[in-house]
Image (cartoon, rainbow, N blue to C red; front, side, top):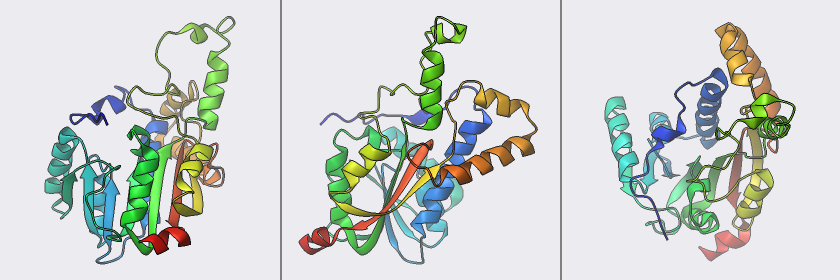
Length: 261
């Protein structure tokens, strides 16, 4: 299994961050923490924790958080952030497909923006189910490459003979990045999750990221106006996960899986 132990997320952020992308990242963080509902003393595992942003926020709410991350570079970033916040979060280098923990170890397991990087996401979900305690919750969050914004963007750019921007050779945001193993959408995510978990809730996050001109238009509007528009669209997206920019699935263990552990 090939894993990049020096992966860095710096390439994820473009040189110019428009309001739609900033809002999307912020809401992914906020909704993940909200749905994890950390309570005092709960043991929480963040698989593919990156800079440990979510683990830090959950620790502030009383969770006993552990972040697992394969990349030495990202662990270094996470350590810097943890030290800056003055919060206790344990970091372990490892991969999602082989979690170095005993069965039924955690009250909550979350994985945000990482599962589409895993060489074997189905195996990783199996491992998350194994280490989750009975009655525990799993929260999986991933970018939706069949979002409404991406669909419309692909349609517009396919009309290259009429619209000049369609002839652009620049990489488009809806094209699968080289470090993503699979193209995730709502149906595919549920297909992977359901053998191991019972899906309790699917939540959509944000609308229209990736739509040509959208970010630039929002940047020209007064900040309060663009934020109000993004918040309104986010409320709509919550009910349409198959079309939203990102998807959150909240799960519990299937009864037959619980009996195995």
